[in-house]
Image (cartoon, rainbow, N blue to C red; front, top):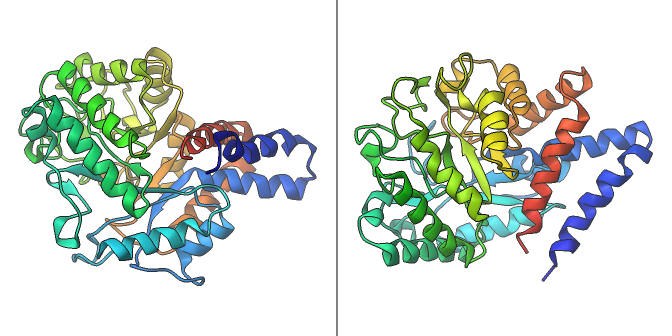
Length: 369
C-alpha cells in the first residue's frame, strides 16, 4: 500500500519545480492542476481506450468522476450502474487511466437518494430522517454499511451525509425526501459524525452538504434559483461548525441557494462572502470545497458557463462538479477545462489561485491510501 507521503510527493515536487520550468512545461503543469479541479459524469457501463472520459482522465488529468444509475436526460435507468461486478470493473478501468489518484464519487445517502440499489445487488440503507429517529447504533451501522458497499466496488467518495437542518418539512429537495437527520441542528451534527465514522472505517471519504444550509428552502435548486433570505437562520451553520471543529470533515459541498443576508448578489456557490469569508473565515474550514452540480437550474439558467465557472473559482471553490446528467455533453470536461485555462491565460484568474485549490485536492487525495 502506498504511504500518504508517496502519494503526496509528486504534487510537492510539481509545485516546487513550477518556477524553474520553461514556459511550455509550466503550461502543461497548469493543465494538470486545472484538470484536478473538475469532477464530471459520463455515460457508459464500460469504457475502452477510445472513450471520451478515458481521454479526459489521461490527457486532461480529470480529477474525479461521478456515477449514476439513472440518466435524467434520456429518462431511463441506463447510465453507469447495472451490477456489482460491472461497477467494480468500470471503476477499476477508470482508475487505471489516472496518473494522480482518481476520485470516484456517488450519491449514496440512503432512503430515496441512493444510486446503488437493491435491484442491482447492493445493500440499501434507511433515510436520514428514519435513522435520526432510530438511535445512535442505527446511524453508525448505516454509515458502515454504506462505506462497505462503496469500498467493495471501488468508490472512494460519497456525497453524504446531508447536514441540512429540517427547518421546513415540506422542503421539496430535503424535508419531503427525508434527507435530513433532524430539525435539531445539534442532533444533525451528532448523527452526521456517527455516519461519517462508519464510512471512514471503510476508507471512504465523506462530503457534507449543502452549505450554508438548504433545509429551509421552499423550492428545489435543480429547477431554478432558490431564495432562503426569509427562512434561513444561523442555526443551520451549527452542524458545520461542530463537525469542522471535530476534524472529521473531508469535503464540503456548496448549495445553489440565494440569501440576501449573506450575499445580496450571488447564490452561495458563486459567493466569495459565503465560501471564503463565512466558511473559510468565520468557520475556519481549510479543506476541499466542491460545488453542487453546475448544470442545475439555479446556476445554468441564471449564469453563462464562463461566468459561473469564473465566479465559483473566485469565490473559493476547489472542485467544480458537472454531473452531466440533467443535460448531457460528451465533451463537457474538455469545454470546462478550456474555460478555466482561458481565464488564467487572460489574467482573470491567477495561476496561484489554481495552485491553491490543487494543493488542497492533493492533500485530500493523500489520505486515500
